[in-house]
Length: 328
Ligand code: BT5
Image (cartoon, rainbow, N blue to C red; front, side, top):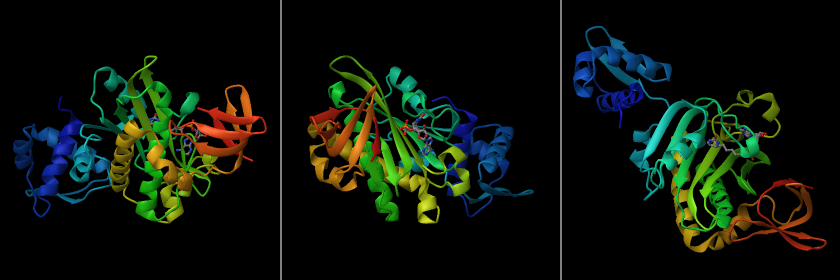
Protein backbone atom coordinates (compact mmCIF):
# COMPACT_ATOMS: atom_id res chain seq x y z
CA UNK A 1 0.00 0.00 0.00
CA UNK A 2 1.17 3.54 -0.81
CA UNK A 3 2.69 5.32 2.21
CA UNK A 4 1.02 8.63 2.99
CA UNK A 5 1.51 11.07 5.85
CA UNK A 6 -1.45 9.35 7.52
CA UNK A 7 0.17 5.89 7.34
CA UNK A 8 3.42 7.37 8.69
CA UNK A 9 1.40 8.93 11.53
CA UNK A 10 -0.08 5.53 12.37
CA UNK A 11 3.34 3.91 12.36
CA UNK A 12 4.61 6.73 14.56
CA UNK A 13 1.78 6.17 17.05
CA UNK A 14 2.68 2.47 17.18
CA UNK A 15 6.38 3.25 17.82
CA UNK A 16 5.59 5.87 20.47
CA UNK A 17 3.06 3.61 22.18
CA UNK A 18 5.60 0.80 22.34
CA UNK A 19 8.16 3.16 23.92
CA UNK A 20 5.81 5.24 26.04
CA UNK A 21 8.08 5.06 29.14
CA UNK A 22 10.95 6.84 27.43
CA UNK A 23 11.75 9.65 25.03
CA UNK A 24 12.69 8.89 21.42
CA UNK A 25 14.78 11.40 19.48
CA UNK A 26 13.73 12.59 16.05
CA UNK A 27 16.70 10.66 14.67
CA UNK A 28 15.59 7.42 16.42
CA UNK A 29 12.10 7.79 15.01
CA UNK A 30 13.16 8.74 11.49
CA UNK A 31 15.46 5.68 11.38
CA UNK A 32 12.74 3.37 12.69
CA UNK A 33 10.16 4.68 10.23
CA UNK A 34 12.61 5.21 7.37
CA UNK A 35 11.44 8.78 6.75
CA UNK A 36 13.13 12.20 6.72
CA UNK A 37 13.22 13.96 10.14
CA UNK A 38 11.00 16.70 8.69
CA UNK A 39 8.28 14.11 8.02
CA UNK A 40 8.52 13.06 11.70
CA UNK A 41 8.03 16.70 12.68
CA UNK A 42 5.03 17.01 10.34
CA UNK A 43 3.48 13.78 11.63
CA UNK A 44 3.87 14.87 15.27
CA UNK A 45 2.25 18.21 14.47
CA UNK A 46 -0.68 16.53 12.74
CA UNK A 47 -1.15 13.96 15.54
CA UNK A 48 -1.28 16.74 18.11
CA UNK A 49 -4.00 18.39 16.04
CA UNK A 50 -5.97 15.15 16.39
CA UNK A 51 -5.67 15.17 20.18
CA UNK A 52 -2.55 13.06 20.79
CA UNK A 53 -0.69 14.38 23.82
CA UNK A 54 2.96 14.11 22.71
CA UNK A 55 5.51 15.55 25.12
CA UNK A 56 8.69 16.94 23.60
CA UNK A 57 11.88 18.02 25.37
CA UNK A 58 14.93 19.63 23.86
CA UNK A 59 17.68 17.09 23.32
CA UNK A 60 15.49 14.18 24.49
CA UNK A 61 12.85 13.96 21.74
CA UNK A 62 9.25 12.79 21.92
CA UNK A 63 7.16 10.74 24.32
CA UNK A 64 3.50 9.78 23.97
CA UNK A 65 1.55 10.71 27.09
CA UNK A 66 -2.01 10.02 25.97
CA UNK A 67 -3.84 8.87 22.83
CA UNK A 68 -7.34 10.00 21.89
CA UNK A 69 -10.07 7.50 21.01
CA UNK A 70 -9.32 7.43 17.29
CA UNK A 71 -10.54 4.60 15.10
CA UNK A 72 -7.23 3.55 13.59
CA UNK A 73 -6.80 0.28 11.65
CA UNK A 74 -4.12 -1.08 14.00
CA UNK A 75 -6.35 -0.40 17.00
CA UNK A 76 -9.37 -2.03 15.37
CA UNK A 77 -7.43 -5.13 14.40
CA UNK A 78 -5.73 -5.50 17.78
CA UNK A 79 -8.83 -6.67 19.63
CA UNK A 80 -11.22 -7.68 16.87
CA UNK A 81 -12.38 -11.29 17.07
CA UNK A 82 -13.92 -11.82 13.64
CA UNK A 83 -13.25 -14.18 10.74
CA UNK A 84 -14.15 -11.92 7.81
CA UNK A 85 -15.16 -8.43 8.91
CA UNK A 86 -12.42 -5.84 9.30
CA UNK A 87 -9.53 -8.00 8.11
CA UNK A 88 -8.84 -5.15 5.74
CA UNK A 89 -9.47 -1.64 7.08
CA UNK A 90 -9.25 1.74 5.39
CA UNK A 91 -9.43 4.64 7.83
CA UNK A 92 -9.70 8.32 7.02
CA UNK A 93 -9.84 11.56 8.98
CA UNK A 94 -12.24 13.30 6.62
CA UNK A 95 -14.17 11.91 3.66
CA UNK A 96 -17.31 12.75 1.68
CA UNK A 97 -19.02 9.43 2.43
CA UNK A 98 -17.60 6.08 3.53
CA UNK A 99 -20.32 4.39 1.43
CA UNK A 100 -19.05 6.13 -1.68
CA UNK A 101 -15.51 4.96 -0.96
CA UNK A 102 -16.90 1.48 -0.31
CA UNK A 103 -18.61 1.49 -3.72
CA UNK A 104 -15.37 2.46 -5.44
CA UNK A 105 -13.35 -0.16 -3.58
CA UNK A 106 -15.94 -2.87 -4.25
CA UNK A 107 -15.88 -2.06 -7.96
CA UNK A 108 -12.15 -2.72 -7.93
CA UNK A 109 -12.73 -6.14 -6.34
CA UNK A 110 -12.11 -5.33 -2.67
CA UNK A 111 -12.74 -8.44 -0.64
CA UNK A 112 -15.78 -9.23 1.49
CA UNK A 113 -15.53 -7.74 4.97
CA UNK A 114 -13.43 -4.75 3.89
CA UNK A 115 -14.17 -1.93 6.32
CA UNK A 116 -14.01 1.79 5.63
CA UNK A 117 -14.13 4.14 8.62
CA UNK A 118 -13.88 7.90 8.92
CA UNK A 119 -13.62 10.38 11.76
CA UNK A 120 -15.75 12.84 9.81
CA UNK A 121 -18.00 12.78 6.74
CA UNK A 122 -18.73 15.95 4.83
CA UNK A 123 -21.39 14.35 2.59
CA UNK A 124 -22.73 11.56 4.77
CA UNK A 125 -25.68 9.92 3.01
CA UNK A 126 -29.05 8.79 4.30
CA UNK A 127 -31.65 6.98 2.18
CA UNK A 128 -33.34 8.55 -0.83
CA UNK A 129 -30.94 11.45 -1.19
CA UNK A 130 -31.20 12.51 2.44
CA UNK A 131 -28.09 13.54 4.34
CA UNK A 132 -26.47 12.11 7.45
CA UNK A 133 -24.87 14.47 9.94
CA UNK A 134 -21.36 13.13 10.72
CA UNK A 135 -19.20 15.58 12.70
CA UNK A 136 -15.54 14.76 13.54
CA UNK A 137 -14.61 12.45 16.38
CA UNK A 138 -18.06 11.94 17.89
CA UNK A 139 -19.61 9.02 16.08
CA UNK A 140 -19.04 5.83 14.17
CA UNK A 141 -19.25 6.47 10.46
CA UNK A 142 -18.36 3.31 8.62
CA UNK A 143 -19.13 1.00 5.72
CA UNK A 144 -18.63 -2.70 5.12
CA UNK A 145 -18.31 -4.40 1.76
CA UNK A 146 -20.32 -7.63 1.64
CA UNK A 147 -20.66 -10.16 -1.17
CA UNK A 148 -23.46 -12.47 0.01
CA UNK A 149 -24.56 -15.32 -2.22
CA UNK A 150 -28.27 -14.55 -1.77
CA UNK A 151 -30.96 -13.37 -4.20
CA UNK A 152 -31.30 -9.56 -4.33
CA UNK A 153 -34.84 -9.59 -2.88
CA UNK A 154 -33.38 -10.83 0.41
CA UNK A 155 -30.88 -7.95 0.70
CA UNK A 156 -33.14 -5.73 2.88
CA UNK A 157 -32.69 -8.36 5.60
CA UNK A 158 -29.09 -7.16 5.90
CA UNK A 159 -30.35 -3.87 7.25
CA UNK A 160 -32.21 -5.75 9.99
CA UNK A 161 -29.07 -7.82 10.72
CA UNK A 162 -26.96 -4.69 11.14
CA UNK A 163 -29.66 -2.97 13.21
CA UNK A 164 -29.95 -5.97 15.56
CA UNK A 165 -26.18 -6.14 15.98
CA UNK A 166 -26.02 -2.44 16.77
CA UNK A 167 -28.88 -2.54 19.28
CA UNK A 168 -27.32 -5.58 20.97
CA UNK A 169 -23.86 -3.99 21.08
CA UNK A 170 -25.27 -0.81 22.67
CA UNK A 171 -27.23 -2.88 25.21
CA UNK A 172 -24.22 -5.01 26.14
CA UNK A 173 -21.87 -2.05 26.49
CA UNK A 174 -24.13 0.37 28.30
CA UNK A 175 -27.20 -1.45 29.62
CA UNK A 176 -29.37 1.00 27.64
CA UNK A 177 -32.41 -0.62 26.03
CA UNK A 178 -31.72 0.24 22.39
CA UNK A 179 -34.36 -0.89 19.87
CA UNK A 180 -34.60 -1.35 16.13
CA UNK A 181 -37.17 0.43 14.02
CA UNK A 182 -37.89 -1.22 10.69
CA UNK A 183 -36.35 -0.83 8.17
CA UNK A 184 -33.08 0.84 9.13
CA UNK A 185 -33.10 2.76 12.41
CA UNK A 186 -31.67 2.12 15.83
CA UNK A 187 -33.50 4.02 18.56
CA UNK A 188 -33.04 4.88 22.19
CA UNK A 189 -36.09 6.25 23.98
CA UNK A 190 -37.83 6.70 20.63
CA UNK A 191 -35.00 8.87 19.24
CA UNK A 192 -32.63 7.93 16.45
CA UNK A 193 -29.14 6.99 17.63
CA UNK A 194 -28.09 5.10 14.50
CA UNK A 195 -29.05 4.49 10.89
CA UNK A 196 -28.18 1.90 8.26
CA UNK A 197 -27.83 2.55 4.54
CA UNK A 198 -27.68 -0.36 2.08
CA UNK A 199 -26.38 0.22 -1.42
CA UNK A 200 -26.52 -2.66 -3.83
CA UNK A 201 -24.89 -3.70 -7.06
CA UNK A 202 -26.81 -6.65 -8.46
CA UNK A 203 -28.15 -8.48 -11.48
CA UNK A 204 -31.68 -9.88 -11.51
CA UNK A 205 -30.81 -13.06 -9.66
CA UNK A 206 -27.48 -12.41 -7.97
CA UNK A 207 -25.78 -9.80 -5.85
CA UNK A 208 -22.39 -8.53 -6.88
CA UNK A 209 -21.85 -6.57 -3.67
CA UNK A 210 -23.67 -4.68 -0.95
CA UNK A 211 -22.26 -1.69 0.87
CA UNK A 212 -23.65 -1.58 4.38
CA UNK A 213 -23.22 1.92 5.80
CA UNK A 214 -23.58 2.35 9.54
CA UNK A 215 -23.85 5.68 11.30
CA UNK A 216 -23.99 5.86 15.11
CA UNK A 217 -24.12 8.96 17.30
CA UNK A 218 -21.79 8.00 20.11
CA UNK A 219 -20.23 10.84 22.07
CA UNK A 220 -22.30 13.87 21.03
CA UNK A 221 -23.41 16.16 23.83
CA UNK A 222 -26.86 17.71 23.39
CA UNK A 223 -25.35 20.88 21.91
CA UNK A 224 -23.36 18.88 19.34
CA UNK A 225 -26.63 18.01 17.59
CA UNK A 226 -27.89 20.56 15.06
CA UNK A 227 -31.22 22.24 15.81
CA UNK A 228 -33.14 20.36 13.13
CA UNK A 229 -32.23 17.02 14.78
CA UNK A 230 -32.59 18.10 18.41
CA UNK A 231 -36.02 16.49 18.89
CA UNK A 232 -35.58 13.36 16.82
CA UNK A 233 -31.94 12.32 17.37
CA UNK A 234 -29.87 11.33 20.36
CA UNK A 235 -26.46 9.88 21.19
CA UNK A 236 -25.23 7.16 23.50
CA UNK A 237 -23.47 9.77 25.62
CA UNK A 238 -26.62 11.87 26.01
CA UNK A 239 -28.53 8.79 27.16
CA UNK A 240 -25.83 7.32 29.38
CA UNK A 241 -24.52 10.55 30.87
CA UNK A 242 -20.91 9.72 30.06
CA UNK A 243 -18.79 9.08 26.97
CA UNK A 244 -18.03 5.58 25.72
CA UNK A 245 -15.18 4.18 23.65
CA UNK A 246 -16.09 4.31 19.97
CA UNK A 247 -13.45 1.71 19.29
CA UNK A 248 -14.87 -0.79 21.79
CA UNK A 249 -18.38 -0.20 20.45
CA UNK A 250 -17.30 -0.63 16.86
CA UNK A 251 -15.50 -3.90 17.60
CA UNK A 252 -18.42 -5.31 19.58
CA UNK A 253 -20.78 -4.30 16.78
CA UNK A 254 -18.60 -5.90 14.10
CA UNK A 255 -18.35 -9.16 16.04
CA UNK A 256 -22.10 -9.34 16.54
CA UNK A 257 -22.91 -8.29 12.98
CA UNK A 258 -20.59 -10.93 11.52
CA UNK A 259 -22.19 -13.68 13.57
CA UNK A 260 -25.72 -12.67 12.53
CA UNK A 261 -24.61 -12.16 8.90
CA UNK A 262 -23.02 -15.61 8.54
CA UNK A 263 -26.20 -17.19 9.87
CA UNK A 264 -28.41 -14.92 7.72
CA UNK A 265 -26.72 -16.16 4.54
CA UNK A 266 -27.85 -19.71 5.36
CA UNK A 267 -31.13 -19.23 7.20
CA UNK A 268 -32.39 -15.74 6.44
CA UNK A 269 -33.71 -14.10 9.59
CA UNK A 270 -35.25 -17.35 10.95
CA UNK A 271 -32.80 -17.70 13.84
CA UNK A 272 -33.37 -14.05 14.78
CA UNK A 273 -37.14 -14.29 15.17
CA UNK A 274 -37.16 -14.03 18.94
CA UNK A 275 -34.51 -11.30 19.06
CA UNK A 276 -36.46 -9.28 16.49
CA UNK A 277 -39.61 -9.72 18.55
CA UNK A 278 -37.80 -8.45 21.66
CA UNK A 279 -35.90 -5.58 20.09
CA UNK A 280 -38.38 -4.20 17.57
CA UNK A 281 -40.08 -0.94 18.47
CA UNK A 282 -42.93 -1.49 15.99
CA UNK A 283 -44.32 -5.00 16.30
CA UNK A 284 -47.83 -5.10 17.68
CA UNK A 285 -48.29 -1.34 17.13
CA UNK A 286 -50.70 0.51 14.86
CA UNK A 287 -48.67 2.13 12.10
CA UNK A 288 -48.81 3.95 8.80
CA UNK A 289 -46.25 3.02 6.19
CA UNK A 290 -45.49 5.36 3.32
CA UNK A 291 -44.36 3.16 0.47
CA UNK A 292 -43.78 5.02 -2.81
CA UNK A 293 -47.09 6.76 -3.51
CA UNK A 294 -48.98 4.33 -1.35
CA UNK A 295 -50.00 4.69 2.29
CA UNK A 296 -50.74 1.54 4.23
CA UNK A 297 -52.42 1.60 7.63
CA UNK A 298 -52.63 -1.35 9.98
CA UNK A 299 -50.89 -3.30 12.71
CA UNK A 300 -47.20 -4.22 12.33
CA UNK A 301 -47.23 -8.00 12.79
CA UNK A 302 -43.89 -9.46 11.87
CA UNK A 303 -40.58 -8.97 10.11
CA UNK A 304 -40.27 -11.98 7.80
CA UNK A 305 -37.16 -14.00 7.00
CA UNK A 306 -36.04 -11.68 4.19
CA UNK A 307 -36.61 -8.48 6.18
CA UNK A 308 -40.03 -7.41 4.86
CA UNK A 309 -42.58 -5.93 7.25
CA UNK A 310 -45.95 -7.72 7.43
CA UNK A 311 -48.88 -5.41 8.13
CA UNK A 312 -52.36 -6.59 9.06
CA UNK A 313 -54.78 -4.21 7.37
CA UNK A 314 -58.59 -4.16 7.15
CA UNK A 315 -58.30 -5.79 3.72
CA UNK A 316 -55.85 -8.52 4.73
CA UNK A 317 -52.12 -8.85 5.12
CA UNK A 318 -49.67 -6.65 3.21
CA UNK A 319 -45.97 -7.35 2.72
CA UNK A 320 -43.87 -4.18 2.63
CA UNK A 321 -40.26 -4.31 1.47
CA UNK A 322 -39.30 -0.65 2.03
CA UNK A 323 -40.84 2.55 3.33
CA UNK A 324 -41.21 5.07 6.13
CA UNK A 325 -43.12 4.02 9.22
CA UNK A 326 -44.98 6.27 11.64
CA UNK A 327 -46.46 4.85 14.82
CA UNK A 328 -50.09 6.04 15.20
C1 BT5 B 1 -30.30 6.57 7.45
O1 BT5 B 1 -31.01 7.20 6.46
O2 BT5 B 1 -30.64 6.50 8.60
C2 BT5 B 1 -29.00 5.98 6.98
C3 BT5 B 1 -27.80 6.61 7.62
C4 BT5 B 1 -26.52 5.95 7.23
C5 BT5 B 1 -25.31 6.75 7.62
C6 BT5 B 1 -24.03 6.00 7.37
S1 BT5 B 1 -22.66 6.81 8.06
C7 BT5 B 1 -21.57 5.78 7.23
C8 BT5 B 1 -22.15 5.53 5.86
N1 BT5 B 1 -21.71 6.51 4.91
C9 BT5 B 1 -22.71 7.30 4.50
O3 BT5 B 1 -22.58 8.24 3.69
N2 BT5 B 1 -23.87 6.91 5.08
C10 BT5 B 1 -23.67 5.75 5.92
P1 BT5 B 1 -32.51 7.76 6.61
O4 BT5 B 1 -33.40 6.73 7.20
O5 BT5 B 1 -32.84 8.30 5.27
O6 BT5 B 1 -32.36 8.91 7.68
C11 BT5 B 1 -31.86 10.17 7.32
C12 BT5 B 1 -32.54 11.20 8.19
O7 BT5 B 1 -32.12 11.04 9.55
C13 BT5 B 1 -32.19 12.63 7.81
O8 BT5 B 1 -33.08 13.13 6.85
C14 BT5 B 1 -32.32 13.36 9.15
O9 BT5 B 1 -33.66 13.70 9.41
C15 BT5 B 1 -31.91 12.30 10.16
N3 BT5 B 1 -30.48 12.39 10.53
C16 BT5 B 1 -29.44 12.89 9.82
N4 BT5 B 1 -28.29 12.75 10.49
C17 BT5 B 1 -28.61 12.17 11.67
C18 BT5 B 1 -27.85 11.77 12.79
N5 BT5 B 1 -26.53 11.91 12.86
N6 BT5 B 1 -28.52 11.20 13.83
C19 BT5 B 1 -29.87 11.02 13.79
N7 BT5 B 1 -30.63 11.38 12.77
C20 BT5 B 1 -30.01 11.94 11.71
